[in-house]
Image (cartoon, rainbow, N blue to C red; front, side, top):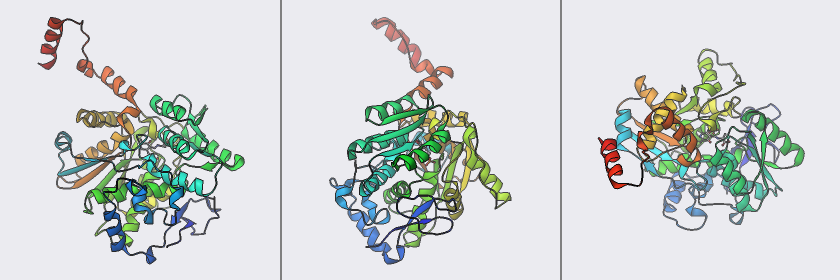
Length: 426
Ligand code: F0G
């Protein structure tokens, strides 16, 4: 079986076990021995596992394990049968966007309600393999909920660092209830991120943010499963929200590996969508078009309604720019207004998502208006988190924008109800 190594993404030096950042400052990544693999054989294997209903093959991550963690010991796998998320094609949204073909993959349908479970099952499995005594992360809420759940499943103590008062309450509730220790930092996500790196190093805990290359390996399965859902017919665009840039890095790596294995006839374009108030990667991408040596400038005070992507100093920027370039993709910025209008459409189709996720539909909307996505194109939107992750934002939006007509308060009296409904439905 192929041996995987962790090498620096910039200088290719091999990193020692347990190290995620090279001396040169760049992040490490898992390098698979693709040359020893047979693409067609792998594909047949993946397809043969499609219907598995039990065991690790029922996981939409571990079904693809040859391209994720080939040497995994099966008894060490910590899985909640993550993945297996649905594809939606709501006619109302297709009409709203005026698009030929739209596929929405809802990663909010994972066990803890976000795509993070796909990376976490792999990261925590690796932590178990390495004999970690505790696991930790910094988070805007979803990673922490996922870490807490997988820590509980593995029987490992979990510690999370979150920006105090700045994460959606449902995510905090999940994290606390699943038994993680929550350290609320007076500061933002980037401050929490800086602290957790130090804490993990000094206090000997396994770092489970997406700087951990095994998290990225797990998140690649979004692409593997998406292509499998589409019977390996490559879409034109894959559009998704971007914060710390783990997904951008994972999606591009997955596509490059599949391409190298001869399993893709062409590359889809990746589109990373940032919220305008927290868009250092968007600004960096614009700058790079003029100056290839430009580096990312962190934002000190990121702000957006999409708290999940309220990040000023994305850790994986260097990997992410490589993947945007490799797929000839794009980086966009959308306003909070555009995000919430897109969310209204997704919610109204009866599907729903948390605000950050709606950035994907807002991004497609923007590219159609700019004439970049054509009306015959097939665009995929990745919804990253479940509607119930952030109910306050939905209720606040409806209240502030006069859409509260969906709610009527009336006495328990038939005539009054009939009258109110008659008015309401008119
Ligand atoms: N969407 C949601 C719902 C998220 O929770 C996140 C990241 C993203 C998109 C952005 O993904 O970081 O890979 O670019 N949430 C992290 C967290 C930061 O702590 O839960 P990315």
